[in-house]
Image 1 (tube, rainbow, N blue to C red):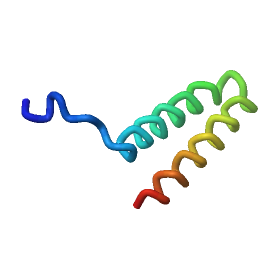
Image 2: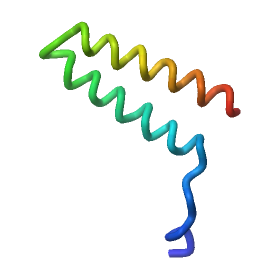
Image 3: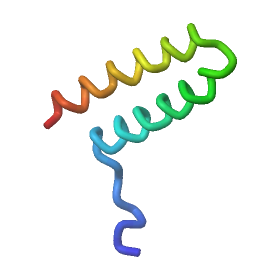
Image 4: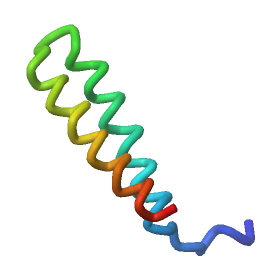
Length: 54
């Protein structure tokens, strides 16, 4: 309850974005392999940004 109004850090936002991109890539992998690969590439770029913050 005390974290109810706590703002998310930049790292937390990037981690959520990374997870969403990987989920989307997984869903696209059965339909459109090229778009799936693009989402994985975007996720890798987000992971690099996360590593820079550490």
